[in-house]
Length: 293
Image (cartoon, rainbow, N blue to C red):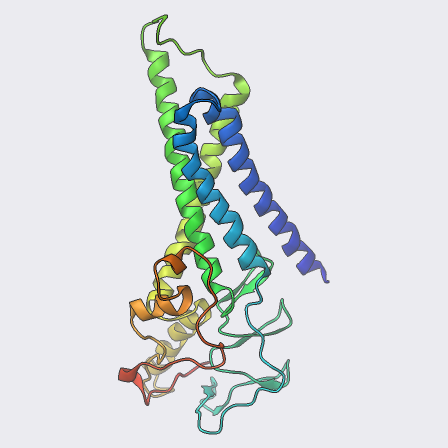
């Protein structure tokens, strides 16, 4: 294991620490005392949903980290009746071939220098997972991002409401019946840290989730979206003929290909459709070339 893989493993540890920190400190030191302790019905009513979201975060994160994104079988060869080509910057067209692995590449597969191999329908290498995001775990990755957005939004709302309650209590006249003692210093510090931490995570992960949803809606991976930008420039320059992306089956079918056909599978983990060695082509786009740089 090289130094970069060790650093990626350390990043995974930091992610786990951050999840555990927000999960434990926001409840045990801030919200549970505010709601009247573990024996209060309000505590359970408001914090059970949050722990469900956090449970989904842990579950999908584990699967995204530990599920193989997809390997090219050693015996795999391009089908004789399939056109699996790539167009180089020079304009030359050839079968997709990885010089590092010294083997042919299936459609949409790419070589990952961090993992040291080709990955089926590679989206990107994610240091936060210490793993590639590809055909085998892309659905888990999307579910993880969605769970983080839900969890951070929910706990952020609870913390903001608690802060507003503290502000109102401080501004109101003293009433011995409704009086609530002010929070201790460590509770104020942890409240601030959790609000800042959950807000930062929500902004960063929310942005990534929005981009992933955008790409998935058009049936592209992150790498393919970058390639399409380059291809458009080459078409404008007249270096290659006009081409359309052949794997866009429509938003609904595109999401189903990653998350499954039922709404339950969009939350619960299921295996991706297909083998990752071939992909259906849109009926409206048959005959187009899936040009790649």
